[in-house]
Length: 193
Image (cartoon, rainbow, N blue to C red; front, side, top):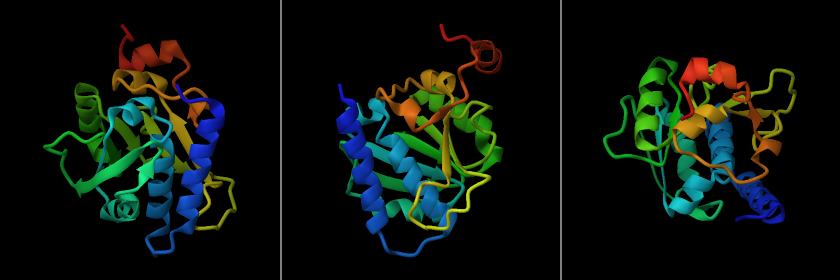
């Protein structure tokens, strides 16, 4: 089990690596890529799986921004591959980053059926059943391209559980949880049993 100090060091190292990257990519795509890698470094299920493959659905710019991390460590594992497209992948990835809200229901079903972590940059989809949402803070005036200070990471614990995902202790300090209301969660996502 990873302790809090090691967890903090891993997260800090990831942010420093992100800060050193100088290649130009679309601002929002860059933030989504960095935030997704930071969140994945906190996901125990993926970290223990030994491999990391990411599929981006609906946004080639996000996929291009992620390619900077290919072959590098994300937490304790190496990012093996990044693929993208407009339809669900034929080969199961570790993570799907959903950038097209029209595909939400299909992604939710796919991820739960295949134990794949779902992440989105589309507001409101975490409440519909996507595990993790990356959104820009509404009241932030941070303009630093490589800072994550203007990003909110929101998790739906129930959706994450239904995807068979586990997180390292302490993730709650970094990711805000919207799945705490078990009555809402059962109505929206089914029973946890």
